[in-house]
Length: 101
Image (cartoon, rainbow, N blue to C red):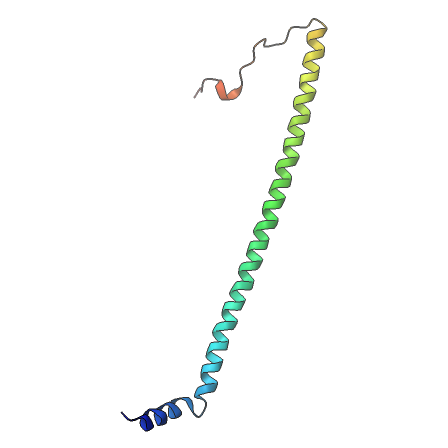
């Protein structure tokens, strides 16, 4: 195959709209990829917002738990100072209790 034949073949394939077809093909693929990246970015932002809200709820629950723990401890201290024995005297946390079916 001579170089003139290769040149003519490339001109035939790429001439008459071949270049426009390739440009539209590559721009279409690029647009699809850009759209997918934008969708992925939105998904990542949604996940970040959900994570932040979950962190806020966990922090709020922890503050409430700590408040009630301090309040209960204060009441237990006041009752013990007033001579009232705690009931039960040695509480067992649920994680250490035997499992019953």
